[in-house]
Length: 111
Image (cartoon, rainbow, N blue to C red; front, side, top):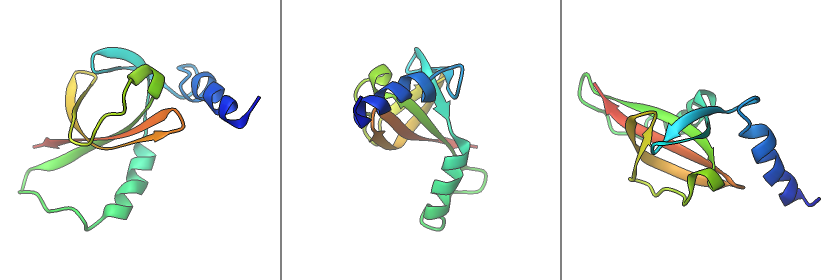
């Protein structure tokens, strides 16, 4: 088995396995294995600290970082596209294909 074949197998059998890491979430009204990662989001935010514009009092950005299999999701979403996660609508602020797993950063203004 090649390294790429092993990654593909691990993506399905380990990382996106709902008995291991993933949970089932409705992504754009389709149930699929998904990981919501709050730890990585904190690390990414540290890199951008001070680079964002300030918002008005009482308004803040809710952010989520999700991982889904490319095969389950479809085409990698573009930045600025809306995405529905568990019936809540977010805007894609970043999306990367990490060897068959999409890392998608979502944002929504909240009050």
